[in-house]
Amino acid sequence: MADRSLYDFSRLYGNEAIKAALIRAAETGRVAHAYLLEGVGGSGKTTLAFLFSAALCCESDDAKPCMRCPSCRKILRAQSPDLCTLGLDALPFADAEDGAETAPAKARSIGVDAVRLLKSDVYIRPNDLDRKLYIIGHAERMTVQAQNALLKILEEPPEGAVFFLLCENRAALLPTVLSRVQRLTMESFPDETLFSLLCTHDREAASLARREEETLRLFVRLADGAFGRASAYVHAQKKALRDDLSYDAHEGAAQLLDQLFSDLGSDDSPLLSGTAEHPRPTRTGLLASLSGRIDPKKDGAEARERLRALIDALCAAIRDLTMCAQGAGGQLLFYPTRTQPETLAARCSARTLSDTFRALTALRAELAANPNVGMLQMTLSGILIGLRI
Ligand SMILES: [Zn+2]
Image (tube, rainbow, N blue to C red; front, side):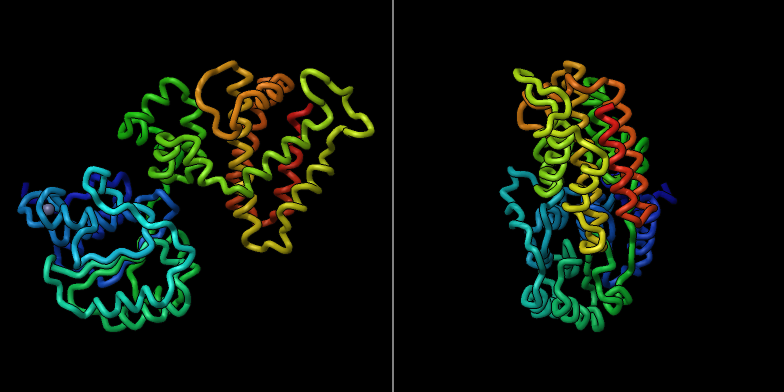
C-alpha cells in the first residue's frame, strides 16, 4: 500500500510514461503551469487533461480522481467557474443525462478575443475549486495574435493556474509559446496493441471482432494508433468514418474508381472492354487524374495529408467491395447502397481485392517515411490498375 500512488489515471489506456510524469508532478507539488498535450485526434489528450485537472482538485483521500466528489463531478462536466474550456469538440466524461452542454460547433480558429477573455479571468482567485484550470482544444487553431496574448499569461503565470494546450501538431505553435509549456506526446499504439485494447475495453469492438474481424482491423489501421478514433469508428461506423474522410477524399476515391471501371458499362448493358467512347483505363490516365486532384507542387505539405485521406477512402471502398464479393452482410462504409459495389465486386477477384487492400495499407505506411508525393501517386495508380488485371 505504501508505494501505491494516491493518483490513478488508469481510465486512460497506455501512455504510461506521461501518466507517471503527471503523477510525480502531483505528488511532489511540482505541477507545471502549462502542459502541451500533442497527439492525433482520439489519442486521449482531452481525457487526460480532464483526469489530471480532476485529480488536482479531488477531495477524496483515496484514489484521485475519484470521479464522484463534488470537485471531480464539476470538473468532469465542465461546470465550475474555475474551469475554462476553449475549442473542445466534446467533453469526454459528460453524458447526455448530466444535462451538460454539448460542445459548440468546431471553430476554424481561436481568435485573440477568446484568449483575452481568459486573461481577464486568470488573475481572479479561484472560488470554487483549489485552482484555476484552462483546457484549450485545437491549440494549433489559435491565431498568432491569440498565441501572443496567451504568451503574456504564460510569461507571468498566476499562482495555481494550470493550462492544458491540446494539439495535433505543435509545428503550428509559436516557438515562444512552446518554450513556456511542458510538452507531452500522447502514445500512438501499434495496430496489434490497439486491436487487443479495443477487444478488452470496448464491448462493441469485441463483438465486431467476433462477427467481422477484418472490419475491426480496418478501423484499427485507419485510426493512426488512436484508441478514441478506432472506438468512434466502431460505434458510429459509417458516420465517424465519413466525418474523418473529408468530402474531398470521398469524392476523389469515387472518381478514381469510376474511372477504373468506366469501360465496363453496367450489368444490363455490358460494354466490350475499351470502346472509343470508353477507353480501357490506363495507369497513365489514373495518374493524370490523381495529380490533377492533388498537385504535389502546388499543395505542398497539404498534398501528403490529402493523399493520406484519399488512400483511407480507397481502403474503405475496397473493404466494401470485398464484403460484397463475399456476399457478407454488415454495414458498408464507403458506398451509400449495395448496388454499385456489388456490380463492381462481381468484376474483381477476391484475390485482387485483398492484394489491393494490402498494397494500399502498405502505401499508407510508406507515406510517413517518403516525402515524395509524386512518386507515391505513381505507386497508387499502379496499385489501382492492378484491380483490373
Ligand atoms: Zn474526486
